[in-house]
Amino acid sequence: MTYLRTHILKASSIIMLVLFLLGCATYNERITLYYQNVHAGNYKQAEKTLDGNSLIKKPRNRLLYLIEKGRVSHLNGQYDVSNRYFNEADQLLDQGLGGAADGAVGVFVNSMSQTYKGEDFEKFMIHYYKALNYVYLNKTEDAIVEARRITLQAQQQTDKFNNKDNRYSNDAFSLTLQGMLYESVSDINNAFIAYRNAAEVYLKAPDQTWYGITIPLTLQQDVIRTARLNGFNTEAEEFERKFGITYSQPSPSEGGELVVFWENGLAPVKTQADMLFTLVRQSNGDLFFTDVGGGIIIPFNYGGDRGRVNTKAVESLHIAYPKYIAQNPYFTGGSVSVNGQQLSLVKTEDINELAFKTLQQRALQEMGKILSRQAVKKMAEYSVRQAATSNGKTNGWLEGLGYGLQLYNALSEKADTRNWQTLPAYIAYARIPLNMGENKVDITLRNAQGVEEIKTITVQGNGRLQFYNYATLK
Image: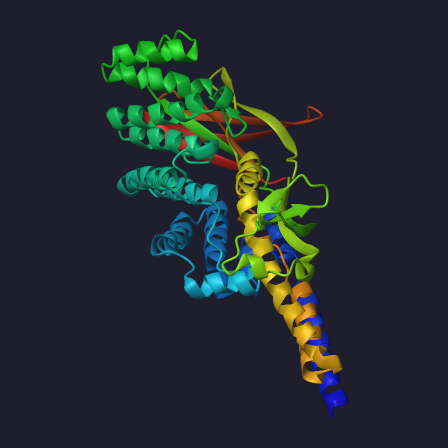
């Protein structure tokens, strides 16, 4: 009978192995067909593929589903539909994602099985696309509401990190966009405040470089120009000193201006990196994890009696940790020209840099959670295995349970490889004057070999600030 029980449990473990192997692919691998369609510009087919994907339709991935649907609808020119998805995503974020039960999943299973809560920079990008959608739908008031929401998002980030360790506690690009939105409705006072706040993000950063971006000259000029328009001449002069420039504002163009946003490439994808750690007890009884090379040391945050932790149970721990892989865009630079004037497209938001750096910033905290989870699992496994062979006898049920726990611990370890993968690798922009009436605008893009591709659009100059975003997904 004991023989039968043991083998039933072992057979169950084999079934568990098969199930886990079926689910061991990364998020990117599970949505590859959708991703390929977006990459190829087949947006309608991409939507169908997304709707038919069982992984992204799971309740825990609802936020990912909504923002991907919002993005692909925007790419397809369905701006109203796009904002329906983004608004629902916003509502989910406002209500809060997760909870006690979700936290327990993270403790006993893995973070990939938890509700996806979004990266901080992804939340700012929702506002970017929503604002542009409203602008294209001629819903100016809604676009301004979205501009105000950027301030609320920035405040939440500041409260979250309190500017500690130069963490991502604000988004300079979103604040720049906010200034442009205010300026588009002639709210010059709020435009100046937004531009000033964006500039301060750069000025306070080490080497005045914010996540791979040096402050664009256009932003410097916007701060000084709007300061003077508001009569803040002293502040205008102060910023000229800070920037090291002297700015003479040209006469306003009668047709207004066009801001071109170039969304180049695709965001990095996440894969899984496997790492080995050892639990070590110090002479004072404190416990910490260290990797094979000894370069990473992480305290063991154990809620129980540390003195009773059997380090033999967790001599060696394997963890799966997410790792970004950048996708190099086909195009490497570009410019915008109209009416004989040409301006370079200047990088203003580097999603690649943000993804890598923000993951790095929370690495020790995330590794600590994963290691603690694995240690608790290993201690439970060790206890069952010891009990199965106590008093010189073998308990078949406990032996089988120990075998199952060992297999479960090994196979349930999985990194969270989810992210908003159809975001651009980076965004560059140019602000160019227009004539009244029809303007033919050339967007010239170049690859590393100097091969050029030109996109020509027609814009009606109306004396105001207008927007156009162009995505290249190669």
